[in-house]
Length: 110
Length: 143
Image (cartoon, each protein chain N blue to C red):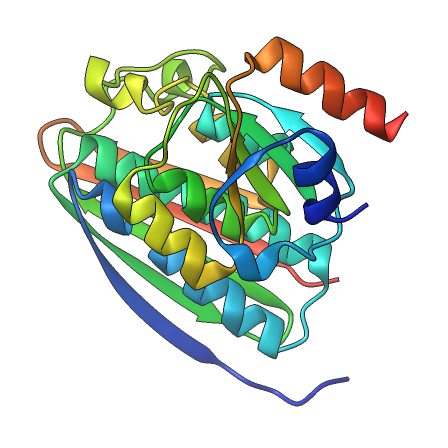
């Protein structure tokens, strides 16, 4: 499944990194602790979080994640957007809570 | 057998500068990819180096990352001028952290950094002097 497909199916907002919308997704990871994501997320996963600062993109890039989904209508900071565009890793958004969006994403994969 | 090589890289880290945290890790990752090091090893090194960088940014005043890549291994020294670690054994425990409230709000400071470094390196040595700074040496062997 590509990032663009989950954008369409889960009606996600695309904030940045549009060039990365054809990235292939291998699964998802949910965490707001950056060291947890650093240690445990895997390549190609979509990261669901409420963190909006640019260190999120540093981690997404180092871990080769497919995309980041911000929950509860949170918006990325300006330098997060810039970093996302540089790395072609999309930052997506939803008004849903972490629980709801994680459940819906899980369902798409199982 | 590949050919013999030694590559040395150096990066500066500024304490408190979260905007550039991850830059050395990103550069080292690129170099290791170019050298065709296997993906699993690169992932381990990147995790360990990123955590070491964040420790300097979150706790110390400034630091230097020195990287030496040889044919069969990579050695990384992260040396900082900072408050030092009073009890290294305690700091190694998962969940133990002395990070500030601001740092924790960013999602750092969960007490997972040093355990992540231990888990992702073949050798980890930490020397520290309170009030002076900390020197971390990490070695990963290429498979």
